[in-house]
Image 1: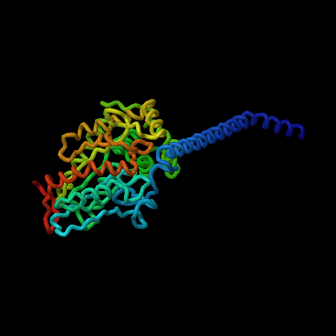
Image 2 (image 1 turned 90 degrees about the horizontal axis):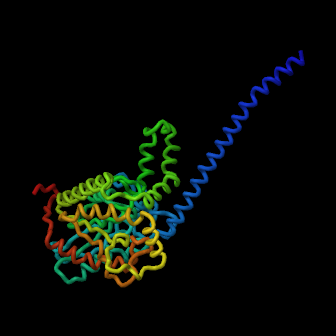
Image 3 (image 1 turned 90 degrees about the vertical axis):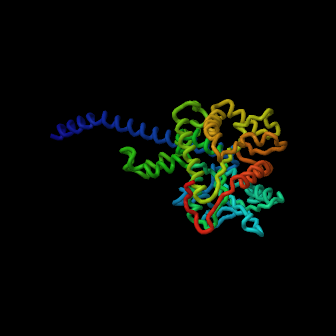
Length: 391
């Protein structure tokens, strides 16, 4: 009887050996996959962080953010910018006129180049523009309000403009959008007209539950979509996958962006103001007769990298497509090449952000455009209301 039981147990053990081997192999495969995924994520993190140090001089692209229901997010904890604890106040450069009828208030929106890239408020385009406008000796005086937020493009600027018009008591005579670079950058990265900083992370958070069966684990699904691996994929898309000028994606970008800017033009007129879209310069798309020989070594290396990959092309294609579609708009000012005459270093190594002298140079070029705009496009605003005008 004992021998029979032993034989039965031995047979049962033998029959389970293949199952155990399969389970062990499966467990080893799972461990390999998990370790490989973790290795890819860590490598992606290191590559993203290293590239941020090269391009932006710090570990992060952009700045800390606070949630805002109107704008999606605003920047917080930026020690270089004067604002309240929630990171919501724009910086005003005021000049009070003795005659209020001769005073003009300018709101300027844009990304980090507008806000001031790692510099003080006294060295921004807005500050230099206010100084230049108010030193001209003309009959007009100006207050320039800097609504620039790092990483903003036109999509988020429209939201911020709506927020400002709703919440602020003062109203502008002129609204300026300083755009072009972030429109090209985020489109190249995400290949959609709705692209903006944090596009994938925000979209994943909202849609993580319903887009796939895996969405039942929505925190994990959102985390995967917001991972460094996904981010490095987007970055590689930005520089390695060429954008075709006549592609449907570019056509959709142009159609969407032009409608967006037309809307801002109409919105401004409804509040008795004018709209000016400044198409900003950047080294990737300049058409200077001679290149900027005064740029530092790291900037030249980045330019060569852009030429060796699809990086320069992917900046230029959406930038030029939008510029071509907007060139005949009454609110458009093409400033693509205004820095070609500079004799000093105006760009930071990434070829987009400006040094202090670059900000000053842009302000000097913008000042006569703004003065002419305020003189020839003088807004007529009701003294008691800001109703929509239908003329």
